[in-house]
Length: 402
Image 1 (tube, rainbow, N blue to C red):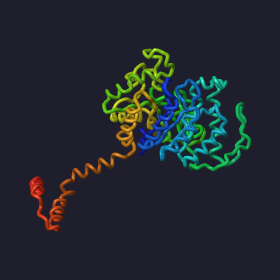
Image 2: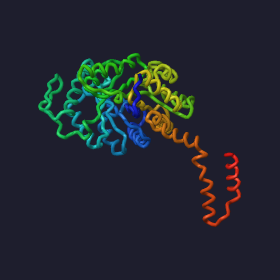
Image 3: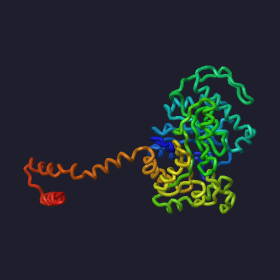
């Protein structure tokens, strides 16, 4: 049986991805403006990445970005997507996120991961083979700090906690939302289950392990005595919508090829230059067919999300992988189409409207039969003669009822 939340959550996963060769200051401004636009459209969440090398994902500290975005928005929740825990002392992560929890009045979220760019770890002298272990150790410390007022003491080979406690109480009850990033391996789902957090599937739905993902979460939760919910499982997928499927494809065809993760200097005809989170397909049609990238109309997106729900057994939300595969104008139009026609289909907003419209149209004669009499009475009360065109219209309606 497929689990379907009463209200799915929708948002973006903003790495962000920007083309080398463009003004980085303007790129960061566009990122902030995008979140303002999403807040206006009613999107639920925006997760902002942390990266320190390779010049494509320009946000070094998502917490700083969240503080700025919070001042420009009203309701959208803002998460670190994700904080690379092996790069930070867990006490500082917990304390800074607690500050954001207060400053945003409950809109801050903490996304955690081991650090996806090996080049970041290389520059800091961190062995990639220890990153997942360090992420697990740091997450355990952070969850203790958020969940208890008792002093926390821990000793590892890379951080120490000595009678540590956070100096403020949580703003959110019981604490701000925490989620762990997952790609292809069981490491992320296992950590999410072990500590009772949410899960961000950042590698989309194309890999064979996707169907087993939530099973890994539940197994780890059962072993650790934690409670988890599919409501807190979000899947990240690139999306671009337009008024026709062909237009949507043409919008992003060149941008998809151009925004190569493995090097702008590579020939764009090379399959090895495919964008990230798209499975390596050399063109947008391949990414759609093989990797689950959603490009088309709102109806195409609705059908794709339904397939994801069936395949996964039920997810709590979908995060659009933010990209710049086309112009800013077309990108913003895509988000507007999603907010107007796709999101409400999974949030219980359209059924009531459709039922009300259908009932009125089915019972039109009964519901509006008093309208003509009221209009005639209004002219009579004013001592005015009924206009001839209105008289003819009323006569036509009378004959139609007969």
